[in-house]
Image (cartoon, rainbow, N blue to C red; front, side, top):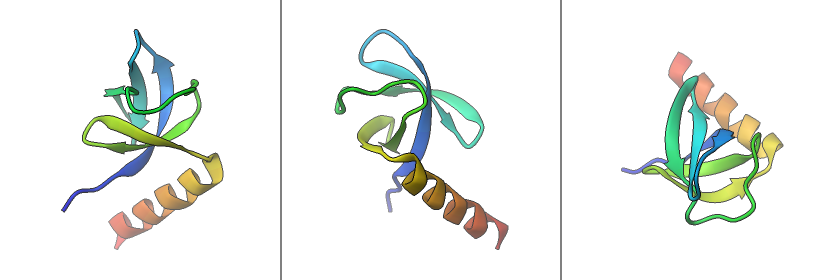
Length: 72
């Protein structure tokens, strides 16, 4: 099973790379598949690639569900 999750962009590097916050861990990811991403934006991340931008409210809802699942 594969899992895609929302992550927040914390830094932009040389295109197409960026740094994303993944549950408190900073990781280099690829933005090759999305356009117009800025620091602070949320993207859906799958196997190191941002697939699409996501609005902050939806990202926060999804992250809250992941947190709730981990507490069970």
